Amino acid sequence: MKKRILLLSALALGLSTLSFAQAPTSIKKGLKITLLPKNINNPYNVIETQGGLDAAKEIGAVAKVVGPSDAGASSQVSYINTAIAQRQDALVLAANDANALLPYLNRAKQAGVKIVTMDSDTAVSGRTLFINQANSEGIGRAQVQLLGKLIGYKGDIAVLSATPNATNQNTWIKWMEEELKLPKYKDMKLVKIAYGNDDDQKSFTEMQGLIQAYPNLKGVISPTTVGISAGARYLSTSPSKGKVALTGLGTPNQMRAFVKDGTVTAFQLWNPGDVGYLATYAAASLASGMITGKQGETFMAGKLGKYTVGKDGEVVLGPPYTFDKANIDKFDF
Image 1: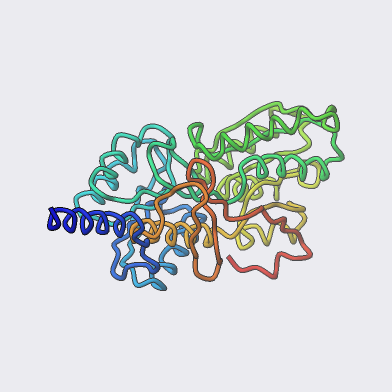
Image 2 (image 1 turned 180 degrees about the vertical axis):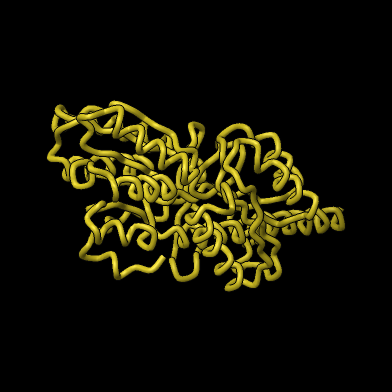
């Protein structure tokens, strides 16, 4: 009887020890991480994934960037399958479609690959964490607020988006439409949402088409780095320069000349390199068992500091920043 009591006590102690086991406090060395952007020839994606590579170097991970040359809904599938076959510890991706990738991502999760989305999300079931550049509502509303100031809150406006299925674009546009319902925008009318498919030439053509189709157009929001630079390129040599305000999301380096020549007064963005950097730290923290993706968990992300996991696994980098002639030379990305 005494032996049985001692055995049960030992078993209870062992279970207690397991229940209160501490999560690892440091990132594992040698983690294998795949970075999968929407498409590899997009300037924004290049900066974003470089941030991921920088983070990987800091934590001693082996990271690589792979991806398609186009931003089609199914173009990323083969790269997800390769990550599974190569037994990658984590996959960090900017999704081209919210739902098309779900079967493949779920297969990756079942194989033990930790999934983190950045910039453009999938449905919640397809990943553990989503690294959002800024609060989606804040981005969408801020774009309308900025354009409103630029055009005196009066006139027809349009949106030059990326692809029709881009989840980040569509979410931002939804919040733009909500912002436009406020009384101060009663004299502003959204006449068209055009799609440049994150292709430079198509975005250029779509901008041209908007200006020709809507003679009372006063402003355009292009919440995509490809779209805003292509739109600015068209506008810079158009008779509408100085008459149609263009704003949106772009990088300082691609927009600097257009700001300085008066084509664009102001635009917004965050540092895309920081998005990839934060996403890679998050993925490594997951793969190391430091966090599970539960709301309220915290983790450190190198130079960016401490972050908290929010509802549905969302982690927000920070608010968008407005660039103009007064500050644009302070930035180089």
